[in-house]
Image (cartoon, rainbow, N blue to C red; front, side):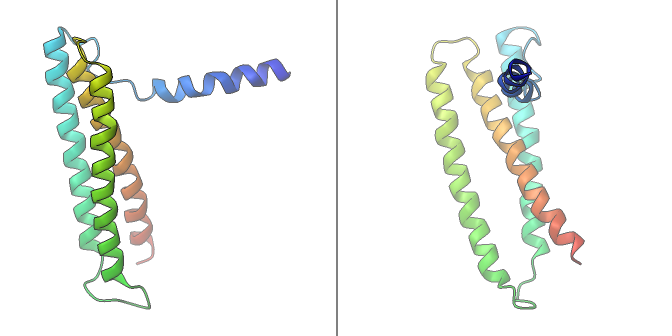
Length: 134
């Protein structure tokens, strides 16, 4: 029983990773995959921008019911700026690691896309939570 549990726990990261495989891998030449990865990143980034803007717009200009919305908006802006810096450095690491690879651009765009998808999900949870309280 312990061996089955250990095997399951060992394979868990692989199943999580397999859900995040780049949709552009295997779509023709390296150049075609790079174009695809860039487009997928642009889509994810646009969705992130829309979600962030919706969250900002959802917050009242003035504090309401003891909630300091002006402070929340400012903190959200700081968090987003910090997140952008983190993503830039994280994906730069991926880019450097893949120096010389024909898939360097694909890996770089994939890194940025995955971060954008994850950040969008986090902001959507916050957005949805605020919508439910209305």
